[in-house]
Image (cartoon, rainbow, N blue to C red; front, side, top):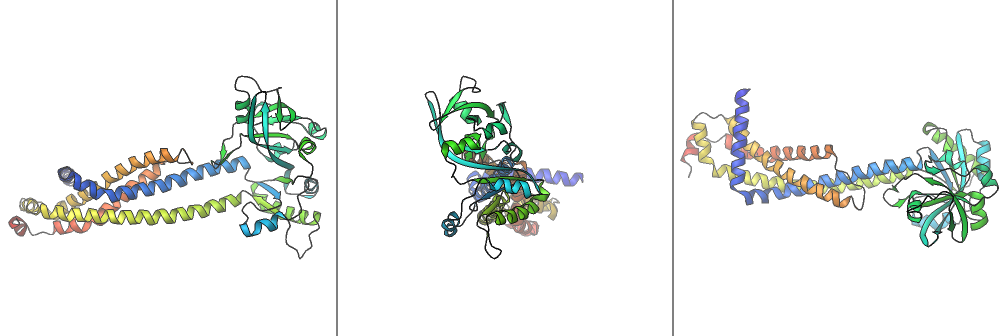
Length: 409
């Protein structure tokens, strides 16, 4: 074991000296490996970041929540017009579901609109405004930083009260307490009674903090009772989600008078749809990334093999001398394999350094995270490429006849 360790150490020293003696050649050889490592780490970095952001975003929506709507979330363009011609969803449908469903914990009808929100001389545009009942707090996981949610009595009496998102509070009230202040949503005055805790963005696209929540009846009085509604439903648990979906489908079909032979004239959406879309995106990303990575690594590996053949040829006499003084085939083989792996590991180190910079840059636009496991995978690939493409040159060096090698050159 001691002798083997000494051989390894000597092989490392010889390999490093060889690499340092031909810096430009070594760098050009490593270029393909660097590109391959940057590609594979960037791919896993983006996918890991997207998965983390996706899980956080699903937690905001709720994993056991169903949405009864006019159309599906991911409707093909050819189907959009047909689905939007369906009868609108009525608020009264929530009462039908609440009374008849057994696998349901809470039901809340909602109406949505995008409105400007104003306080004194400050105006925010494009703020998501939703009207619902007090039961929405049982459907969605609502956390408040300050104040309270509106009550069922305030919903029944159509009080002009509002719970605002964290960004709305920060932008409209940078230097004062928002509770008790009066804001305008479009031209209507509302008293701020609560401020939601910061939630962040959904998939890095739109922010849950740019919203205002008001009682459903108030929304209807100010912005129209005939607006298309959405029914948000929380199942008893994730295990009962399929049962709840089947049950709700039957209730809604009966309530809307859909004949047994007719297709549904509504859609029941759930967060699982996002998982299917993300799964397809991941599959495409993996396929493209693996193809590009394999191409770059093969090119880099051929470069490593080429430089190792050149290295063996240049050091034929040195190999002969080492064999003449007792070096075994294993020591020669190990030396050149370590040199090949060394080239790849240095390339991998440079590739990971570049990937860290790429991750920082990409993270400004989409979620990205460079995990320790990804770095380990990158170095594992480097070792594998070094062994695979360095084995033949190393084996040729180990099999050289010492007499022929000493006569070379």
